[in-house]
Length: 234
Image (cartoon, rainbow, N blue to C red; front, side, top):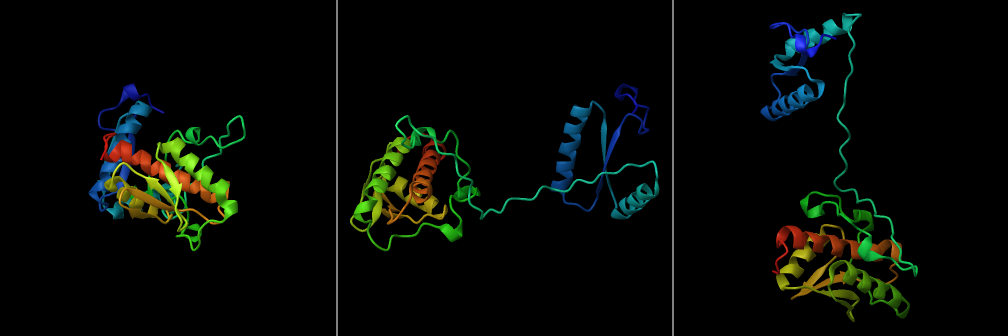
């Protein structure tokens, strides 16, 4: 390969050439220009970008196929994730006494479904409004949900007689925003003034529904504080 410092006039020695179909959109051509600029920096060589009629590209491709000395490699775009697919679950973190350490379980959160991120749960496993109130043996599950919400958000939660978990928010506006964002995570939610209502069983398990409820409250609360109100009460 010719040294980049020995560029020979207008010839191609010491240059890289990126050829694109002139009919592609201006946005794609700009992406190609950005790619060429990064490639020039990384390779230390000038990069030329040529937009030509597709007929010339066909002729060039045919010529390269017939050239025994030419080496070609084609790169396909990576598959795009299904936006409806649920997010992957964060691993459990445990305290010394064997309880979930909710406050340490997340250091970052993925994008909310509201903003195009993967939902917390898939449509087939969505958490819906409770048909009946939790039974007596659900008390431990309810206590864990309340503890997890408190540790991750500082918000107080209490069970209701109708089978919901009521989370007291800073304002009706906050409760309404969290409710709308959580519904898009495929977790049912309702609002009563400044209280956010979430499904609370029956029969929820720690590593499935309980974790999902705590996760959606934690990440929507995080976005509410960091991106909606900028940390100021609303």
